[in-house]
Length: 358
Picture 1 (cartoon, one colour):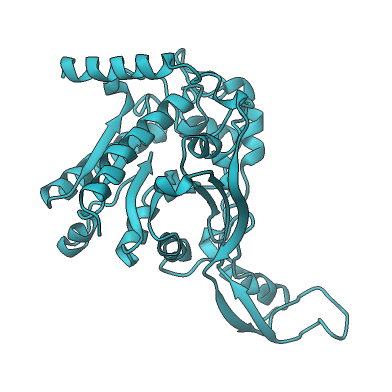
Picture 2 (cartoon, rainbow, N blue to C red; picture 1 turned 45 degrees about the horizontal axis):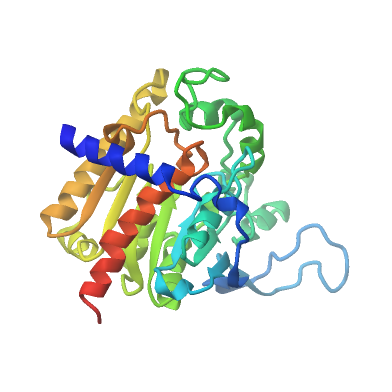
């Protein structure tokens, strides 16, 4: 174990000392293309289109609407086709802003991955931000067609709960001494947090379906999820593994009740799971949340590997990297962590493809 940690420490020391590592953002960002589009969605005929209009053409009109579509924005670097595209999906009560500029103004993972030669696709979960959801239930309540008790819950998280769940410190506004999240910019993170409408979604979650479809559309991609969406790449692969070249699950409670045939399907895809620090250092009811999730992910990794797969747990404290929060992509050492993921993609996804071309 000591030799293993020494090797990682040496790698990290070399990476952070490389010319241009700290000044990556000072170079012009050269793109082959950028843009946006929607994936998936379904049409629905509804009589509850409008609940508060009085115009003769709108009030009470029935018609077709599109729901549950997923918004995607992308950037493609010059020669980006040489590397696997990466799809990044945010967690609870957030949007794809998660992956962009950090709350304290530093380069986020979306730009950094592009600078490292990967096309990046940022997706807003269905029911969040710029993506669609089915609002007819709200209008039906407004119109008196169904009782208010049928309204799904709109989930929101307070600043106080976020501080603890994201493991910035043991109590609100008190940070861990080695905390890597830029806590002085916590207010900027709170601005990123928006209502979570996932309770309006059907089963299975359309985001899983849309992620699988996007991977096929891209002719192969690495799917990356975080927190609430951390296990979404696995769920997408179970729906359709055709386009899923690799999976990165960041800080998520893993599912350990998969059937043998499901594990066999996932065992064909390289999987990386990453966790930060202070998992068991939050007092009160949350104290067991992250340790339980971490243990479940270790079990999942073992299950996949026992089935002949290539799954890896990257637990940062064991690698000598201390103080990381739940928001790894926004922590002060976020680019260092990005390099670990990029290295894993190179070794486990791209070399595997080159060794076994279709």
